[in-house]
Image 1 (cartoon, rainbow, N blue to C red):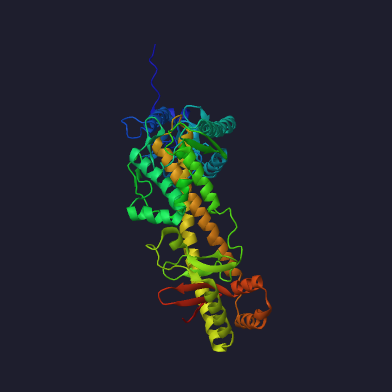
Image 2 (cartoon, rainbow, N blue to C red):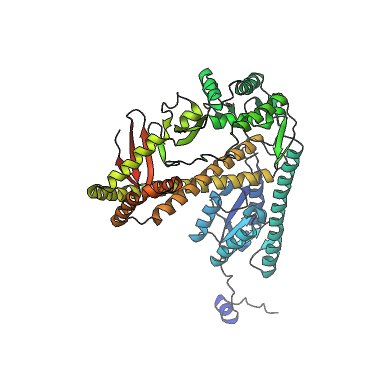
Length: 529
């Protein structure tokens, strides 16, 4: 048998088609990890490390498909999945926009987002950039229609779970309050916080001070006198240190701080919940009989947190007269001797903190009102002064608007930043059965700060709206002043008050120089002695 010769290379190419394997497309993969709280992040092997290890193993199993892990890390430790304001996630989206990522790999889908709305938006971005999404423990792959369907179903359950956890946390805190338990927040004078037992404990030295405060008010029957005495002694409000080490020093006393102490049911071993006063776990430090006497005296003195009617006799300069020394408002008040009524304007700083804070004392109401009315009359008779007032009013109004806009922009930015921190804290607390004391304290501080800022922003918005709505022209100023002179004598006292306040924005009384400066529709008119 003759041996069969092997085909030559040329004959092989002529008789058979050689198939060259197509090159595998490289898939650039990015791993994203997230953890809601910061607990355990400094350990040798954290939850983020566990997530990343599982994702790396999955990518390694797909190397035959061209999957390669990029060097950048996208780890968000201590961030809630309820929003997308997370630094690592934002860097991930930036990388996707730049075209450097083909696939996003996560441990579970709720690591990317717990909000169904946010998740849908992220998926839209991935689809627009042709970026795949894989959850390695849930067999989710968006390259298939079945994978996309399962993804939406699981996301609905993830959001449902998040909302249930938040509701449970809220219910748990309400139930604890109904049982009189302490649920976080800064301590009050007379108590410290036992972080291990999570309850208020009596501070003996401060408790004695609190009892002395109640006794002083019953003795002096005047909040201002008690404030002056407490500040004279060098006493301050509560000074404490948080669990994280942040120090909150005590402040000087004023009437508002004193009233919060005198009306706080914490001192009789109780707490407030949804408008009801209930027994609490902590020990009371003030005799309930003394506490009751103080409440009766507060009501009798009219210090009921703004519930009483003030200035019922009216005042021409109510709300527009200011103290030239400290800048505080000068409140209208009165006394009676027999059948005679004596009206005054008193600096509110002096009222709240005493003569050490401001030396401007009571000013006879009739004298300052007559003086202001006479200045308006003089202004109405001087055309050159009217023009000067008009030009100054335009300048000052624009300056005022600029200051308000700047403050609004600054506060809005701060409010947005703090709002994100509040949301992260709420999610962190909702994600654990025993939230740490530091988280609860920080959340209480931020919520109080946010409430104060929101009130200030409302004030700024109202002022800006009012200023922009004002239409000031020199003919209008002249007509208003001439009308003032013509009709003043025939108006009732109430109508005179309305007219003065429609003409004057502010009157500033200088106690030292015995003079007054009048701001008319945003302009300043120097008054005499």
